[in-house]
Length: 509
Image 1: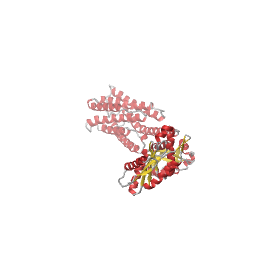
Image 2: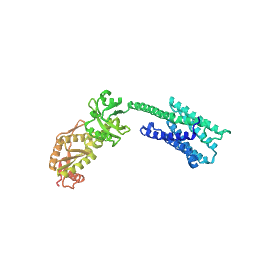
Image 3: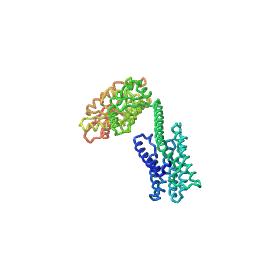
Image 4: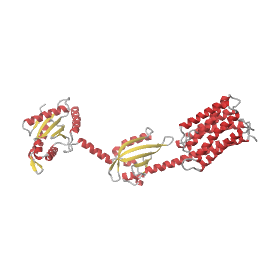
């Protein structure tokens, strides 16, 4: 029994359209790795082309020839490119545009060709577009599965059918049309139906197989990175529990893997850092952000604190709910120690250990503003070591340095804890006295002067008497600045030196 060719093409067109739309619906619920670019578009284009082809004689030739063949050939090209993507072969823009240009030119030329010429031309192109996927499946990059081999030989078989159709149409005894009922067309329709069903589902299975393979490979890569002894890595749950930890993190925190998996990361977070971390974590859980970075401290098993730099990334389900959280933890304890050391060096005098000029200006400026705002007293003294140049010239700079250290020590013994002692430069020292009147500052600095005078300092085994000259000024008026206070104290120091040194002078406001 000969199958009606026009009816077969009609049902084939509807089948291709339905399959194409089902593909769109199916792939919407799949992850990116299981989506097949071009494929749904290929089936829809083939379906439209088949339906337009059935209208030959009932609709204008432009639609039943040019547009119909453009859709059919374009659909076969898109199916070819879809399979290229599945088998790991790139589809270049040049190939894409070249094929489309050839298809458009052929479709435009179809109305000017005889029926036999159209069948031959279409069969040649179809043979190519089915042979290429077969070759791609059989030459698939990586390990080729049995399913890929089956699909490859199936596509080559369809290509052979189209080649046979081309040879049949070339025979002088034949005068075929697109709807000619013949054994060749019957075989062709059976083959195309077979590829629509068996090939279609086979490609879906192959896509899933490929996605599973990529997932396993991705998990293997992640596990290899996870176990690298370079940085602490953990996977945590939405309820803050440790789901997995690598050996580096265990070494960092001092716990075994089983111990950590029985705890939460909040149990080990330093209390002062917990609130900030929890606030960011809750933003991730709420979907406001996907990742965050911060510096935080953990309390290790032996009780000591380790500084870490945390980089956190959320992994979500397709419905946007949280699946798990990946966190990278880098030990920055040594870096923090060096930063603190550098900050201290930037703020402290290297010889005497008291604050330096820059830090003193910062503290004094802030303290003056506070004293003015609260209407509290504040005093400032400038202290010079008398005849310091002579000490350097006579005993050398090493002894001079020891003299400065001795003055610093004795001064620290007599000033209050809230007072700020600074080496301003050379042998010049400044002391800021919060909550002290000039008279109170005078009393403190007199005790310092008397202590130095009464206790000769042992410098390289030689007792050396040290004296100081001190100028004092007090805060007076809301508009007074640090520069004005320093100027007044400097004037008082000048008066102390003019009066014979070894004395404390307060400048009257």
